[in-house]
Image (cartoon, rainbow, N blue to C red; front, side, top):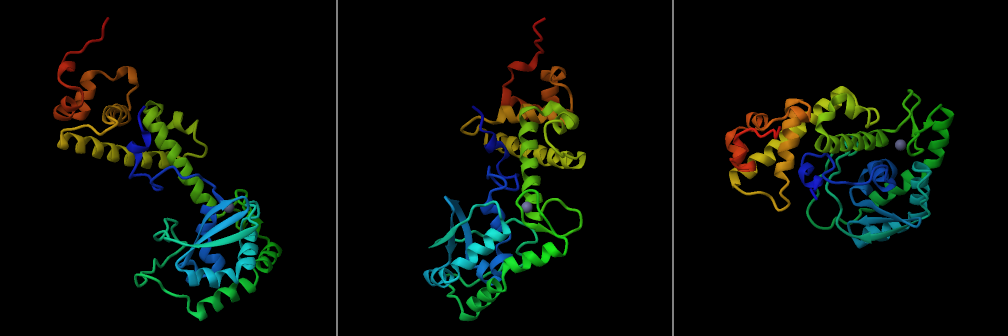
Length: 285
Ligand SMILES: [Zn+2]
């Protein structure tokens, strides 16, 4: 069985198959908004299980300081993600992720001194103040001002007509990208129309940019194999080459002849992948 993830790995913005609309991911995207930049740099929501949100902290002193804020953090997280079922938080010291890929959320990826930065009391005060200020109070004010719940996660969205918050928009774009990439690999002959029929909301521009990135990515895989003169463990290269030729040539699969493969791939790559025995066309008719 071909491992599609291997073929796509590296170009995909997520770098893997993370679940979409995961409340923890969404929470992570707005974490600084909830607890403030300082606290957010030293803690991160990691997992939600049976109503318990696990928060990873930079050090035991951070865990201790934040445990004083536990109730308020729960309230803030629930206010931000009403459907998440968060009932309590737990803290654990651990490795914090590198600056996340949500653009615009943490504009200053801060390079802290290595090691443990203990919470300055001012930091905790700031967090406490922010939480005391009351996310729920702010939510009420927003509702009064005409904000609407995001149709994806329930967070309030400014009244400019958007049905989804930016975190949900990002998650859906990513889901759309991955679904499209998967289809382009498995059924590259579908073209834009066929693919868009299967992927909700796929624009021609988005399709085009995924197609370009995949072609470049796949060519890289094929070139690396050719230069190294060996196939990867799972032998993905031939499948990648087939998809590459169909996607690149935009021909229906029935029109792809051995000569087409050779033409698109070039002699050297073609012979590396398929050997030289296919030199003559054998249509078998
Ligand atoms: Zn949302």
